Image (cartoon, rainbow, N blue to C red; front, side, top):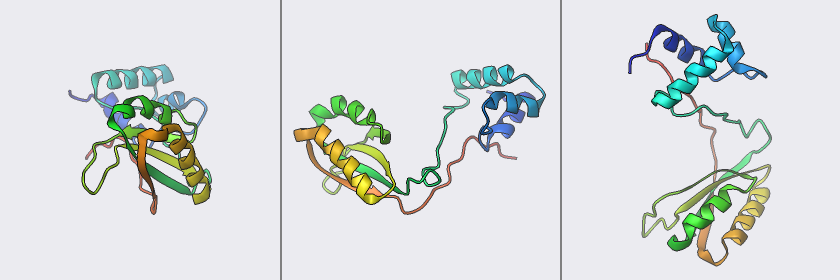
Length: 159
């Protein structure tokens, strides 16, 4: 699908993220000389058409004080993972949770849940809560702590 001049200007204006203001679509619209509603409608259409996959907020956990971030990995019995995964995902301290294939014999984990805490002890306490929720369906787990901040970027246009 070809992009028109407005689409290119809209992507260029938002590729660094939406402005951190109360009405970001209006702020982008002001930059482009159009109403904020036109920005919102075009972005919605781009989502529907598959030009963009999502519009979302990506918090910087470190700046919020959550410096002990760990991907918890769980070996959950296959017959229980579909029912238990959404329950883990609903925990308030889990930012994202998903099922992944095992890679045996070295990697038995099939459920991943990202945990954020102000200390490793806080993250371990959260993992204990996840373990309690999973109960006997969990055969093992580990926590892989973040060691670097990776830059997250959105849609970019090449020159």
